[in-house]
Structure formats: C-alpha cells, structure tokens
Length: 229
Length: 229
DNA sequence: GGGTTTCGTCACAGCACGGTAACAATGGTC
DNA sequence: GACCATTGTTACCGTGCTGTGACGAAACCC
Image 1 (tube, chains in turn blue, brown, cyan, orange):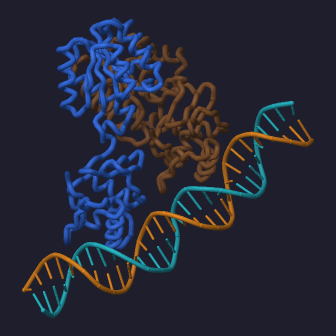
Image 2 (cartoon, helix red, strand yellow; image 1 turned 90 degrees about the vertical axis):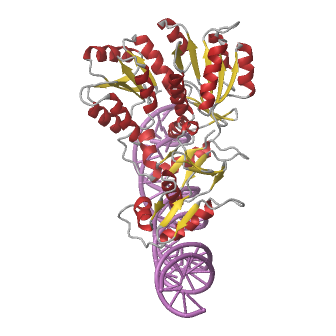
Image 3 (cartoon, rainbow over the protein chains, first blue to last red; image 1 turned 135 degrees about the horizontal axis):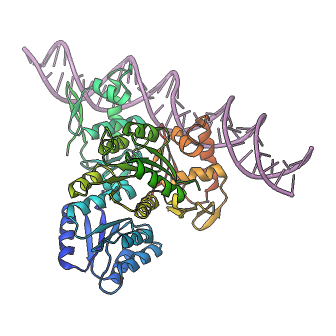
C-alpha cells in the first residue's frame, strides 16, 4: 500500500513545518509549497491524494487555487481541505460550495487535522485508509475481493479467499482444521477434516511467488497459521 | 436523478423540524427519528444516502449508533455527519475516528449544514449532485443520461444505465446479485437473481469497444464489480 | 531403525456457477 | 393496430471449483 500523497499549500512556515512533521510521522508522503501557482504545477505533474489548502496565501487566494484545481481534469476530483484563520460562517459556506471537501479553522490541533484527513481519505480511496488488510507482503481487500502480494495481484479462488481472509484477520494465530472448517466453511458444515489440507495447498499455490518464502506455516498436530508480521 | 435520501436522528424536536423543513426545500427526501434503535432499523431496511446523527440522543449515545451503522454491512459505507453541542477537540476527534465523515457543532446555521451535506455527498456520490462521474475510460453524466467511453458516446438502455451508475458510484467494489437488485431495481423488487446476469451481459455489450478490456469483473461466488481506477 | 502418526500431493468425479441465446410479456410510438 | 425497444425468465452448455480417497513423504516416539 503506497503512502497517501498530500500536498500542503501554506505560507506560514512554522505551521507548515509542524503539519508536515506530524503527517510524516503518520506515514504520509507530504510535499509543501507556499505559492499558489507552484501548487497547481505540483498537483498537475503528480496528482496528490489530498490537498491541504490555506485560505489566503501570498499572491493568489486559496479560493482561486481551489477553483483552478477543480477546473483541471487531472485534479478535478482530488479532495481538498481548506485551512483558515477565519471562522465566519459566510466564508465557510463559500469554501464548501466552491468545491472544498472540508474546512478546518485555525488554530487547529494536528491530531484533529489528521483525523479529518483520514476521514476524507477513507471515503475517497478506501485502499489508502486501511480498508485493506495487510500482513507481511500480503494485502487483501475484502470489498473489492482482491489479493495482492508485493503489489502484484494474485488469482485466488473463492474458498481460498475466505481462508486467507480468516488468516489475515488473525495473523500468527494457529487454527486447527476443525476451527478452520467452522470459520471458513460455516459451523454446520459436514466436511472431512483433511479437506482443509487440500485447500491449504491450493492457497499456498495461489499466493506463491518464486524466491519468496511460504507465508503459511504448518504446525504439526495443531493446525495452520499465517506467518505474522 | 432521484432525491438524495437523508436520515435525521435528533431528539430536539424543534431543531429536527427546522432541519427537515430546510432540507425538504432543497429537494432532499428526509426521514426523522429521535430513537437510536429505530434509526438503525430505518437505515437497514432502506439505506439512506447520508445520516445526520445527534451526538447524544435519548437512550443510546450517537456514537454507539454510529458504530453499529458501520458494523452492519448494508450501512457500513453510508456517510455520517455528527451534530453536537460539544466542541471539545477530544470529542471531535473521537467522532471522526469512529467513522463519522464530518462533524458540525451546535448551534449551526441550516445553510452551513446544507453546504456540508452537499460537500460530503458530492465527494461520496457525485451523481447525486448531478456531476459527471469518471471511472477509468468511462464517463457518465447523470443529468443528461449519457455514457461515454474514451470520449465516444455509447448507447445504454435504462436498466443498464442505472446498473452502470451504481457501479461507477462505488468503483472496484463487489456487489452480490441480491445487493444489485436492491440498489438498482429497488429493495422491494421480487426478481430472479439470475436476471442480473442478463443485464450484466447487456451492460457489457453496450459499453464494449473492440480492443479494450471488459471493465466489468465477475467475481465467482460473490458477484460483480466495476474495474476500479 | 521400526513403527506410527501426521502431512503433502495428486487425480478424479460431481456439481455449482456463470455465460449465453431464445422467448414471451410489456409498454411506448407512430 | 403494427412496430420497436425493453424487460424478465428459462434452459442449456461449458468451465472452473470442490470434496474425497489413496498414496507417498516426512516427522515423531520408542
């Protein structure tokens, strides 16, 4: 899962550094500029996942930047959060109507800003906000029904998918065949225990890549487990 | 374009009536309740497009309602705006982290609330705001009822249009046949599951262009999805 | 090492699932 | 009314998935 890319447009250097520092700490990839035109260039050449935009930056107004981001096809749907010292309702509404996705008034705490950013990202790109489960080099998206290893998508059958999901929801934990039957096949299923072995093999086969270790661990006389982090 | 459906959960009757009145005026379809459990029922039986949720309603807390909305698969992705008298940063962050999409403190002006609602909706379901959605090389204009692929217009039947629109509002996500029937045909429809297959085929046919991959993905034993970004 | 238990692997039969075409019913248009 | 577009249903077919038993390999115990 690539780090979400933020573009911070802010001319208060001290504030910009603080925000940048905090977001870096949260695993974001942050670029900063204090100039509206430069912001548009940066956004156009490598579209960020979200823009933090000061209401008023030296030269052009933040509003104008917002409008022009929306006009450009490449950046039209990038979510924007406006930062501002003003708390007039009039301005707030104007910002939202122009196309900002959220509006945070200064002074704000970094924690709140982080919470808002991740709330917005969760909506826009679920894959960026931890909707996907990641264990080691494996990632699984339950809603898209997708599995990838080291970024490359893997073809996984239905039962193997459910099996893997169960493992990834409890990484490192050992499950007996009976427990796996209950969890993956349903508690009422009347299926041979050994059948689990076969699906374990199919799962191993499905997520195998040459030169990489098998993440499924066999625990003799106990069951199977997914290699933890 | 159907009216966006709001669910308002608020126990201050006077405020509830005011909000309801204003949103009706904006063309929204509003249902109101003052009870957390009833809210969950209403949301489950006919998923709204957005929930306005009071922080503290008689009996259960709004937070609990929020959490349970998120837990239910049907309502997990419905955006939520919390309304609250508190303005503690701690609470605000907590609400956002729990899964609310936005947070408005009382007293608020109806205008601002409307602006925030439409900002969230624009982000989550652009089609509701009458905006053109773009996913991959597909674009869909909800007001003009037009679909284009790589710029060239495509002829798409009514049902296929609604189907495609639903897919494009949730790109990448897998929907079971039952879910598609609820979302596209209406929750009360009594239609064979396999009928969905036929319309999927018709949709595929309608948006097919030679030399391009089929954007509709079949997920065996799970449903269908539109190839995400 | 011999015996026993546990696991890995394979091939196969059965069938569940999705793709497709054909058809009847409906409703709108001229 | 005749025509056309659209819709929902069904039946058939092929493919891929699933569960099982059998056999050999490996690990464990003495």
